[in-house]
Length: 56
Image 1 (spheres, one colour):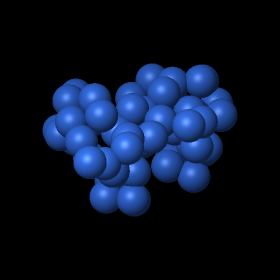
Image 2 (spheres, one colour):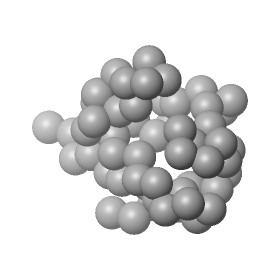
Image 3 (cartoon, helix red, strand yellow):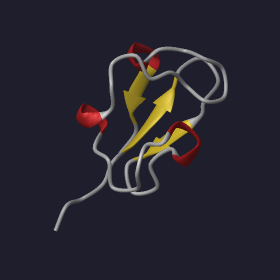
């Protein structure tokens, strides 16, 4: 069983939850952080993936 992680945007504090994905960007629930395309951006503020840090 995969233990899903969460990542927080350092610009706006949006949380990307691997278990939930990002349906608005067609990122399916269960999508791991490393599997998200590099051109994905924060749905709240538009920051790049590099602005996100592992929360837990």
